[in-house]
Length: 162
Image (cartoon, rainbow, N blue to C red; front, side, top):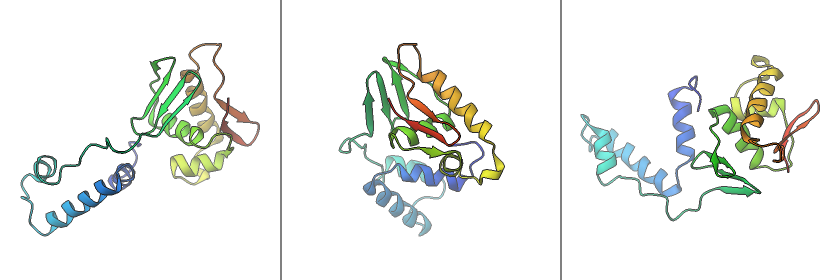
């Protein structure tokens, strides 16, 4: 998520992370709240402590990828290399997620802007993407003997490959 996202955009991104059962429970909560069946003074307590509490996703597997000494978990927004947590910015994580979840697929600059920034290409330059990818590469390549996970496709874009 980005600080420039609207509340609706943030909600849509968070909603996408919920399981189908969690989405149903949340939708039922909203219907009950709008119908006046939830106290208006403290709807959050009713949601989190009441009958609408979202159960943990213990029954659903995490989206995890292991490539050599690299570990990636989408739901935990976690990237680790050699057991060390790699702190990524929101955009760095979103770029890396897109690449690692689609290995060997080349993403053009235009595609990255559309899928990560949700913006028209005219608002950002290739240099902005290059800077984010450069920072991402520096962070995940914590040692010289590690592969460069994010590869450049000269003049086109980037891909994840080992």
